[in-house]
Length: 112
Image (cartoon, rainbow, N blue to C red; front, side, top):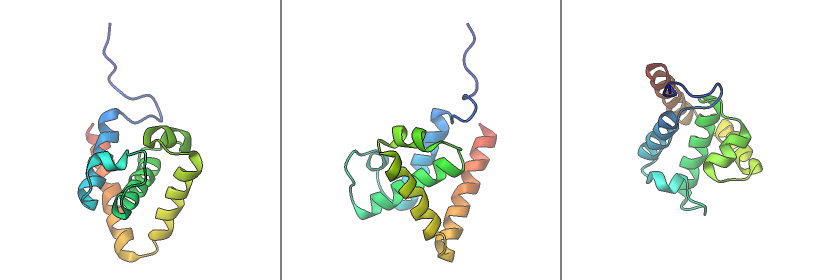
């Protein structure tokens, strides 16, 4: 029996998804567990979770349904997170940070 070597098309590997969560948690200085918490948590955790959802959608090409399952949120909440981060990118500093995170994650995906 062969081991599975790659994620299904359109489905990120667990290692890559974990890398997104770890990277965002580190940048926002929140525990990874806060990003997956059922309750909202602190304002910092909410912002970090929204960025993690956004990056998972844009870099990992996860669908809203997949994001909802992965983050334990309703589809409308995941859509709100994506739109919120898109709006936040109007700020040049935030846009630079998110672009940097996207670049790091794309590089990690290529290396995986």
